Image (cartoon, rainbow, N blue to C red; front, side, top):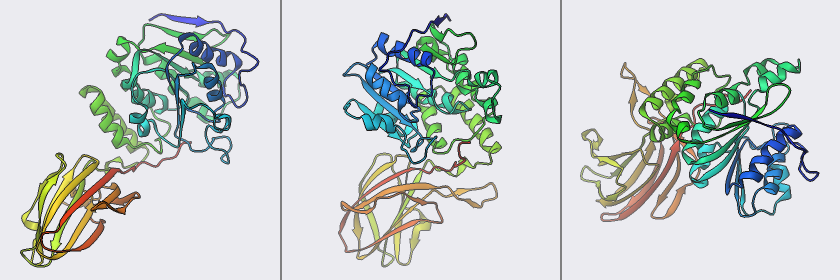
Length: 405
């Protein structure tokens, strides 16, 4: 695993240094990789003021795409300014897109594959950059350059003899840089420890990624807000090995317990109950539905005023076409699944429904949190033979809300 020291040259007079949280030598280090390797698709995670974004927009090839992502909507140093404000004010690049107020998995599909350069500079405390890298790795090309800032921030702060309690916890980026495997790594040559590094994603990076999952077992300093760990659980299960997935789930559960966060309240299943109420013969006939939908007409859902259907699905977009049998009042309940404790007591399992369309009419178009015993109810008078098209969209409920320190 060769590691090379790069000797910084001077930056240009037109390189931006305003609100850039890097030294001039570190700015040169970043510029070196953008100008030398000429990446066609760049992702920047951790934007802050956008001071560095201004530079990347100047350095990159004209047709290269840049995606900038930051979980904070506002600049951490001045809450009156939006994240990335410096680059936004400059404007004028159709190949740049800013996502402020988003976790990476929120925009994962929109950004897409074939990333050949990524800059990660976020919280520096666990699980921060380690979690971010795992979220991005499936989209990184072999040969992608990964640039990490503040890899030894805790030691830099100690050296200055001016540090606070949180500085001792700013080890995340260093753990990522040290645990990831690569055939090529670079650091900046300094008189002390380098605070910026880079590596190439290669076969070894992917083959030995479990090393990074073990790193996640290091004590966390915070349980990140704005991150849906149920979404990460599903993502890790899909993109990584069962061994990695098991380690991740165990690790997250233990850390959630430490921070007294109940991440089990988020459901992976949405439930929809549908009944046509009038008399014992009133019901609905399912004509067509999404393939993922599990539909049942259970015996307990039979009343003197109608017989109902229960639909459950893991897919977050569901379409159902039904026929009303008999005149009546069509009633649709949006709810979470029936989850029971070992004592048989119902445990709230939350789902965020975001859309309900009935015959193309928008009934619900904002996030509505429901569980089994606290459902959203829609009612509509119907006649025998009426055909009803229902469209549902839902998302995993974000249960973890421990703020960044």
